[in-house]
Image (cartoon, rainbow over all chains, first blue to last red; front, side):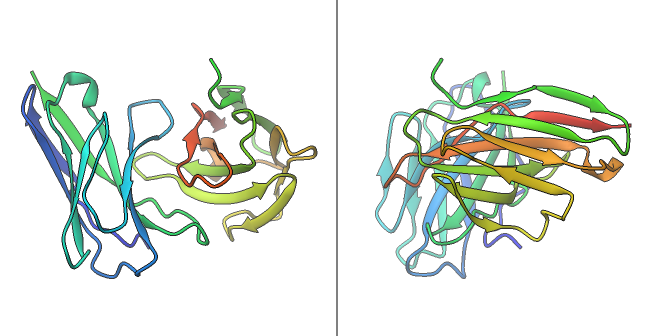
Length: 109
Length: 113
């Protein structure tokens, strides 16, 4: 079973920030939080990852709570091309990745 | 394009036939992964290689499935005596030494009739 729980779907207006939550209350100390997304009919695409500090790159920001039991992926200015399924994964390199069902994000024009 | 490539992109086969898929990872990526994805589900891990060595196999990989990476570059996934339950998207991913993020290919969609 996936080690993370995410809402099944979310809507966000185009141009607004999309905030995608993820719970990982049983995360181990050596597991990173990874986010991938999958646009329809494509393979998953890496977005960002972090251990305990907040991270930002050109695609998104990742906010991890101090107790590491949850995190939020932020897409600062969502566009229609951000419509996808977003997967939150708790993973360390010595284990296989377990994807859950993810959050289906709809960006509304 | 220097991303991960997979061939064919689509395969329709009759039950009982054998099929083989190919994955070409990004050059110099030493790890290669295979996943299976059914409709509405996230990808499920099947197996992974580090160079030519197959290091882990999921119990999803029945005896009818075999994967190879003979020279540590491209990989093949063969399914023998296909069943309708094998219908899925088969995804390949690769990663660079020391880097954990995986780069996925576009997948091969298998339909077993």
